[in-house]
Length: 219
Image (cartoon, rainbow, N blue to C red; front, side):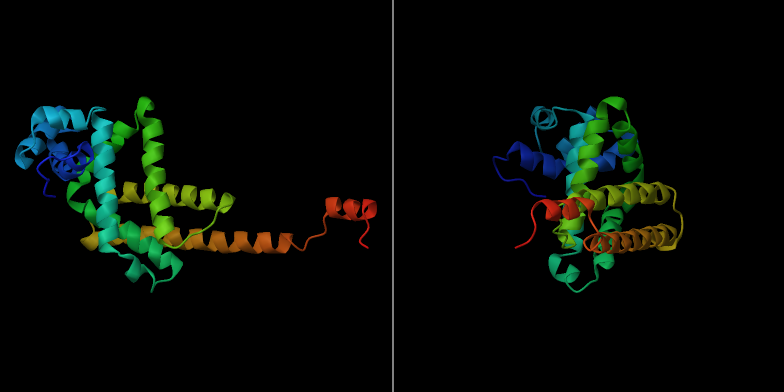
């Protein structure tokens, strides 16, 4: 990413994130990785330090945001429109994994940082951001509790898939793709069953409605 003459801190974060991730595989999510990336991009080290004032979590946050951008570029809305819902979700998760295929060690180290007790809230926020983006781009418009259950379920599936992905040596990550496909299929079956239960519940006898009609009979 080319920086303008007077970049904002957000632009600096976006520009340096991929370079920091590439170096994090060797140096961890440290000031050393940030400074190497800043030097390569021609960014003043002090300015880079200011952009990532929260340290490792700020760098990981920027990298995950960059991965989300790559995912969106790889699978544009126009392409998603021609797919079934499950295909939209799978395509986006696969695109996200492909974006980090060469930085798996950096991801492993990032997850170790986010697993620290003081970073669990940040980890939850970043995971939710990605799950929400994937569902929104897949066309989900739910505003009731389904909005939350879908994202929580996807977040759990994505986390399990990443665990497989980190140690997957199969050609083209076929083991990871197969694992993901099975989990998404299970999620779609669950959502379909849940929708059926809700629909049937609309016609189920209700004690409260019955009592209400006794008290306020229909005229």
